[in-house]
Amino acid sequence: MDKLMNRKQYDDTKARVEQLIAEATRMGMLEPDMDNEYTREIASLSKQMAAYEDEYLNIIPLRQKSPLIACIEDYFYAHGMKQKDCARMLGVNESQFSQIMSGRRRISMSFAKRLHTKMGIDAGLILDYA
Image 1 (cartoon, rainbow, N blue to C red):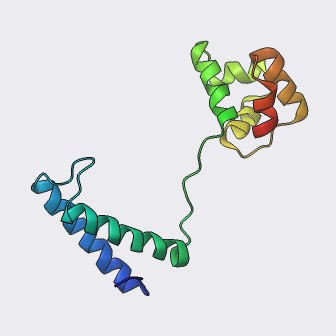
Image 2 (cartoon, rainbow, N blue to C red; image 1 turned 60 degrees about the vertical axis):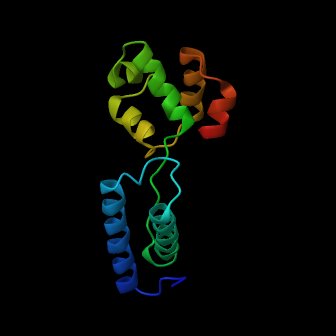
């Protein structure tokens, strides 16, 4: 079968992949960089499942943390600060800062300027990800 066409085929394929993983693990044939009948079949079936998921299941990919947010976090962890301390330093309340850090609130121009002047965050990084 080249393409999964319905949920039953998808569920059956998923069960088969789980079975193959269990068997291959038991037999020691599922180590990194191994190429054998198990790994090839698991890869093939997984690609079919991914194509079905993309087309029919509307699975939302996990969000990746913005490099700017990661930089802010790195700063306050490196300086032994808590989120509330960082918020105070940047002149916003804890709630606003939490919303910015979680991506629910956009970064204002004045906040972006404080990120640069008070934390030394590269202006280019701020412009790219704010």
